[in-house]
Length: 460
Image 1 (cartoon, rainbow, N blue to C red):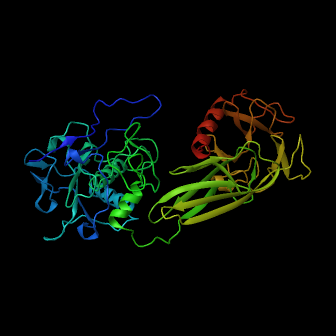
Image 2 (cartoon, one colour):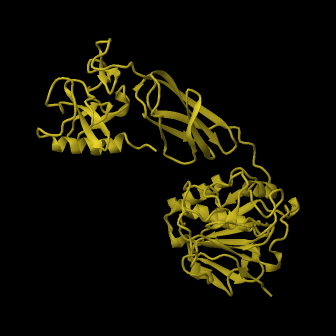
Image 3 (tube, rainbow, N blue to C red):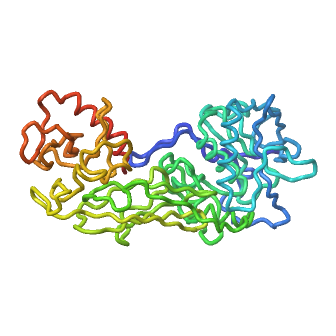
């Protein structure tokens, strides 16, 4: 007789005000409830299949029979009777993106992700990625379900109901990764970076974390199984999958990283923005920023990779270094050197420079200097090219609209609050500059504010 217990359902769950609730997620069913709390042990290598078959049930759906789990005979313990799961309704390109995402998620392990049914006589895990929850008798809103035991289930079938949200690539990938792992005894984990989580915070692409943490859905709880090393208090999803399948060919290829802003040799001021690009053939784990060798802020685990420099940056030269780490802890670094300019009040010793917000920057006579025309941020010494929305683009410097901080011929155009930029001709009063919002510049000011938000202000 088939014995099942619904351990956790998404419907009707409450959430404390301090934790963001995820979109509806998957669940699991015990194959034998008496196993709850029992020790988890790695299966014998001879009992493990390293093949995960992603089945989109195209073109005409998948027929499942009710019974003890056996992917080779299309038999599953999830439906209560013969069921038909409708074919995945997304496009071929979307399906390929889902497959690639799952492959990258499982890349650290000795697992083969395939989309063609293995030959007769081959053992495999079948991940059905199609249909709706109702196709197998699950309540509306459930995105996935899998058989569960405190250990590896041979030839199991997991379900990720992709037609509930066929275009949400990362969410489907997350669900597939979670449901397949339930079949080898992994519980939900209270870690928004890991596929075993219920939490929608954290990166869109969830990756198995090689770090022990509490089990749980929307709050920490005791794990349903007793795991090696961590016991019932915590779970390390990465270590459990590694113990089940072993490691893939060692990844020795480092990621690539580049600093997109500021440019090397740029003149900057405290609080300047830093942005970077980082990629890897398998996946980027985190990206860190250091200024003069000191770590700034927290490591970022998802794009955009953007920071702001400390506001108390001292005058002089500074080294900006961004380090990217992949899932195997290979690293890559990119470095640029910047200068927080010479202190000034109204003028600078170098006649080619002008005084902005108390420091000397490249003036209109320098290529890329303040007020020179530009097309992109890289054309400017400040790495800031502003557009008034009427076809006028100039290199700008940051200024405070509440202070007289721009040189003669420029005015501090407000972007909001205490943020602004020195814009040519915005100063009607002459002299040493200052803020101005009259004299018919209303349209100009609005255009600048919008363009800068798009081109420059994508910072974290």
